[in-house]
Length: 281
Image (cartoon, rainbow, N blue to C red; front, side, top):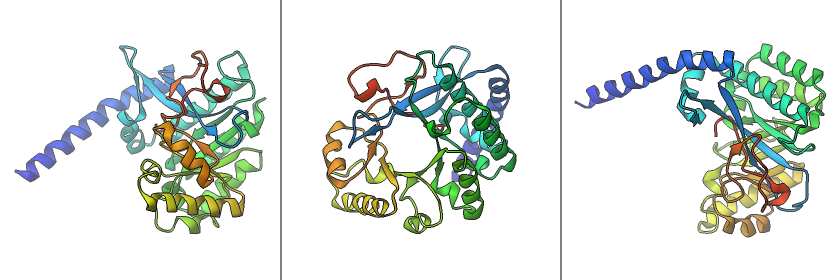
């Protein structure tokens, strides 16, 4: 019976993936995607340059905006992530170039790149071309890669990062701390900042071990000049503890929820920032 149920679930998952495949092709061809943003807030300098993470959403036939959790498995299985990443970068650059009030004229955008893209030399060249030909200052772009994706091939990840950093873009290492050898990777990967895995942030005020881990990450990053970002800051009560530990930036529902890029900037947070966004988010 157990085997039957497992088989049933696998079949259902495969059917969902096949159903999503034509929808994703159509989305890429006819702009059925849209972007959201979520703020990344500085704890030390609230008046600093506005900083957002970009999140992707799929627009359904009913107008619903669906998060990548619905279609990511299909995109990865059928090799569509590189094309989706290029769509996101192209759209983000167009928004920054337009300077039409959808976002502050000096805002920085963090854009997630998938593991497939990190190993795609053709995509790397496309990114270099897009950034080079754009009127947007490269310093306004921060590309995010996950720790898991980076360590698959450290040499390749290093070269990918260096090739875009030479243009002036920065890089962030996402989900940091999920692996036991995380600190060793800081010597291998030329990143500008890292995002501390939310698993260590959520209960930081109630778990002394989580607090010690986050503190150790911040101390080491301070030594090598890497900026730290605490993810999944769901409650504003966490902010004093994170600031005391030495975290540089924070992101999460306690700071701001994701909102469509182009919706009015709401008051009440530094820079009137709304929530930050990521491709996976």
